[in-house]
Image (cartoon, rainbow, N blue to C red; front, side):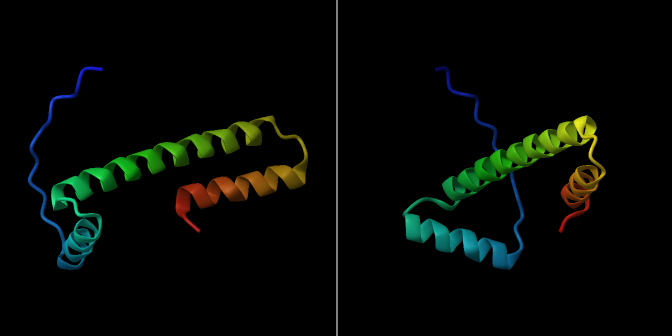
Length: 84
C-alpha cells in the first residue's frame, strides 16, 4: 500500500484542549502530534458512521407506512440533525 503524502498544518488549540492532548500523549507515551492525528482519525470515522446511521434511518423513514413508526423515525432523524 502506497503511503499518503503528509501535509503540515498549524493548529491553535484552546488551553484546556491542549492540556488534554498533552495528558493523553504522556499516558500513551506518544507525541502530541501523533495523538492529534489519532483523535482526528477517530473523529472522522465517527462522523462517517453517524452519517451512515442517519441515511439508514432516512431510508427506513421513506419506506415506512405505519404512522407510529414514521413519527418515531422522524423524531430520530430530528435528533441526528438538531442534536439530543
